Structures are given as structure tokens and as C-alpha cells.
Image (cartoon, rainbow, N blue to C red; front, side, top):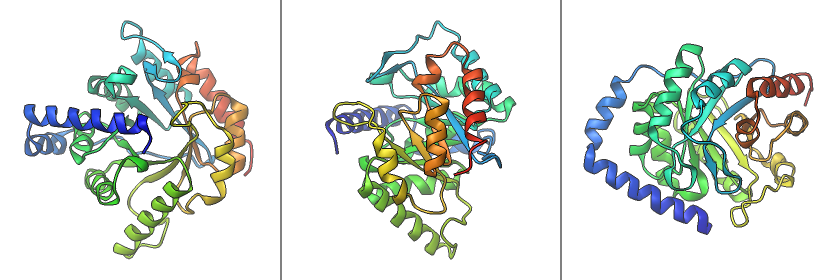
Amino acid sequence: MSGFLDDMARSSAARVADAIRHESLSALERRARQAAPSVPLHLSAAGFDVIAELKLRSPAAGVLGNESQDWMGRIAAYARGGAAAVSVLTEPSRFDGRLEHLQQAVAVLAPLGVPAMRKDFLVDPYQVLEARAAGAGGVLVILRMLTRPRIVELLEVAAEHGMFVLLEAFDALDLDMARDLMTARGADRNIPPGVHEEKILIGINCRDLQSLEVVKDRFTALAPLLPAGWPAVAESGVDSAADARRMRQLGYRMALIGTALMAHADPALRLREILAATRTVQP
């Protein structure tokens, strides 16, 4: 694991320990089960979708906003622009995120029929339950941060609560683990690969974990290794309609776009441009 991910894992584990002191696992699980059903993730028949992202700060880009601005209005604009889901950063130390941001986003998105996804450095099933209790319909799980048994635990909790999961990979070894996990889960359920009750997405993050720079060539290099049967998501480095169109041509089914939308004065317009460009191109 990289130094950055190692730091994030330690910080995340400390947050879990603190949260459990305030609310037991059993109490949180009851609250998660009592939460209103989440909006399901639906992918467009047009063949390409975007997960739009709310983040107030990025280690690479710096400050992208503050809580005095109308970020809930921006989230509504994401939904109006056609986002299939909205990713909400909840990591506090490097991204200025909070679980309250997720709750606020759900309140805006649910009436518009768009699910929210918790994006964080999750290390414990407790955090999946936190996301569901806040109303989220999905979570990000970073393959490189976790052991295989722990990943399986997170997937099981998410499936039990009807949540989608974005499994994030950085290289071929991560993709090998994702493929093995998905094959094993299908076999355990007597379900053919790619045909299952779970909604699992496989993401490629092209950010270098040491320099934090974007390495767009990674999308091209890893595209042939993507597990068949699960929607592939291009993460980081998709800044324009041209970038997204290239992802579609490479075989990616979705893109997760954060900084480019956070920096745009009219994110709904930018999303519509991206979707128009990608949905007119055949892979």
C-alpha cells in the first residue's frame, strides 16, 4: 500500500473506533435498517453514464469550495444534468468531508431519483452501515487498502442492505483480485459471471498514489484487463467531453468526474455535454 493510502487507512480506522464509542454496531445496524430505502442505481440504455462528485478539497487540486457556498444547489444541478449517481466525499482530514454532507446530499437527490454514494477510505463494515443510515445507495471500496476477507465483508454488508459498490483498482494486480472476487461470488451463488443480483462496478483510478498526478495512459493500458460482465468506471482525469468520449471508445461504461465539475460554473451544462458526446459514439 502507498504511504497516502496507509495514512488514510489509519485515519479511517481511528474514526471507526471513535464512532463506535458513541454508537454501538448493533444500534447503528438498527438505524441502517430503519432508514428509508435508497434510490437504486440505474444505468442508461444509451450506453454511458457519469457519477458526479461533490468534494470541497482535494490533496491534488487543493481547496475546491467551502460550506458557505450552495453545494446542495450544485448537487441538484448534477441530477438535472443527468448524473446516474452522486459521489460525496466524507473523509475529513484531506477532503474536508463529513457524513452530514452525505445526509444533505441524499435529501436533495432522493426526490430527484438519483442515488448518493459514500466516497471515503472505508476499512470496516461499520462504515458501510453509516452510509446506509445516512441514506446512501452505494459505497466506494478501494481494493488495495484491504485484505480479501475484509473486502468480502464490505461487499456482503452492502448487498444485504441493497447498496451498489464501486470497487476501485489502480493496476493489473488489483484487477486480478476484483476478477477473482467476482468469479467466486458468482460461483457461491450459482450465478454466471456478470449476471447477479448485486450491482458492482469496477473502477480504474488513474491517479498516481505517490505524486498524486493523473496518468491517463493507465486507462488505455488496463482497459483490456477489465473483468467482463461488470460496468467499468474511469476515475480521475476525465475533464472534458473529449476525455469521456475516449473512455467510451476504450470500453468504459461510466466515468466518475469530480474536480472538472466542481470547477465549472454550470455543472449541469457540462454533464449534458459529456453525455451527449459519449452517447453518440459506439465503442
